[in-house]
Image (cartoon, rainbow over all chains, first blue to last red; front, side):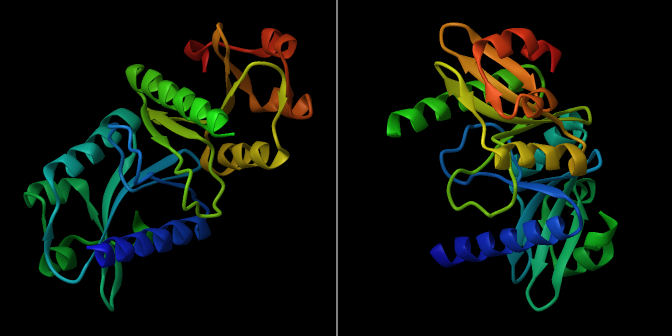
Length: 124
Length: 124
């Protein structure tokens, strides 16, 4: 499991630096000593536009626990953030899924779904 | 020094929960494994309003390193956040100082300055 977490952490770091390079200010959620307060992996903001991003780094299809989707929903409704799931697909790069689409697919994310619904980082 | 950090951490947690109680979504900066990306202690957002807060818990006057002020400034200019220094004054509670005022006072914060310039959490 250490390997899985290390991979996820590296993917998050990459995403943080990509967003920073695009002019966003970014904050990564602390992964230890958590506060019981709902928090996505990354919050990014640029000229008043706020993004809430849950990052996933997986080779194949996966499901997102409804608690994580609900956290993003809270950031959308209360904070006014645009909520996304960012998927780093091996040998392909990042694709972004709207929270709404992932809810409609009952939290399931696979390659076909990502091809149909995914958008590039330039469109988030 | 452990005591100082523990006190600061407890003050930050208190601030996070207070803001959450006011309807803000909040994120605390990770204090380990940092990313070299500028980050205040707390980011809070509510209906598109974004706050960047550096928290201090000190008995008496203190100075804020210019690097920390500049981080807040970056969040103001690039992210569109409202930047504050939150000071938890022993036996008195929190007061909030505008970044601009703290810059003008060359990073120095004392009780007289806080009485003159400080605002309550309800006014941030």
